[in-house]
Image 1 (cartoon, rainbow, N blue to C red):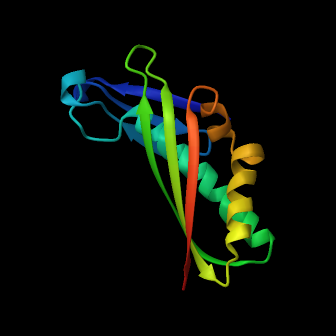
Image 2 (image 1 turned 60 degrees about the vertical axis):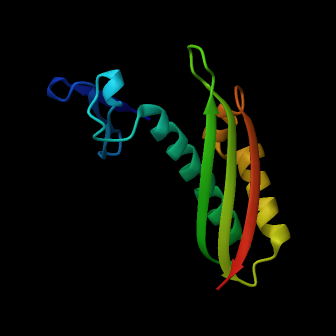
Length: 140
């Protein structure tokens, strides 16, 4: 996996990442950090990537279990250390999984498998952050 980050000097503290798969992601900082608030902060992208990683796992695990999953939303809230390096110290993830006849036990198991075995991002962040999960199942 590769990624190239380029600073955009005219933006203050804006950066563009080009991923190995040829996609672009823009990042910026708040004005008090020299940026113009034009894009997500780098650490916000880390949090978003973690949410995407675990949501992917949950959907795939449920699909492979032949469950009729129709939607998956993950709401994340995080706290960071007060001092440098300001690593994540707490991350709470709340999943809202929708489908037809989804057993709560299957959703619970999919989330657990993601966090214990498959989601590289949350497993890495779990080295510094206490990660908690909760979920609800919505019938559609």
